[in-house]
Image (cartoon, rainbow, N blue to C red; front, side, top):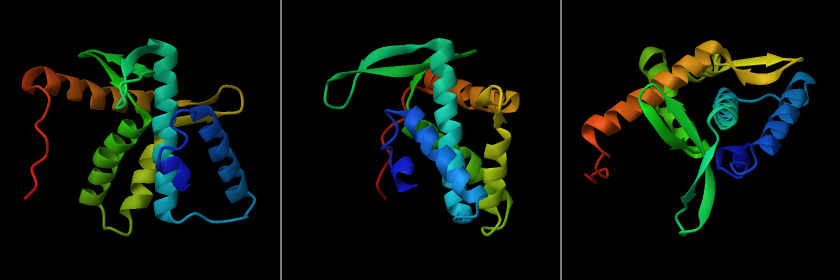
Length: 165
């Protein structure tokens, strides 16, 4: 589970999804039980990975230079406000910030992880025929999140670095 959350599978989402399937199988077989926090992390990873895969299939990728100055292929999100490159880690961060942040604002701390995981589950459709996809509501929610971010970038520019207080 830590390997998923730490980004070890970010460059191979298919292998990460296979690991998730194995974890789900083990859970349903009764081999282990995830804590609410572990379940939340797992669903956050799934939503981010499936969204990245669907955006890659829809919009493709572009080549950018990474932190080391080396070229890498990055998936593109394109919506009503324009386009932006997206990474698995940034999707997980945005989901945690918005979905989980809202859950902790609206529910007691002991219920917030369970409620946020339920939101994540609603963002995914799982079918034995088509596999795992974003639900219509999940796609709409992610579009709203990304389009509002792009609009903010257009009107306010890139945010200043956080200040240390």
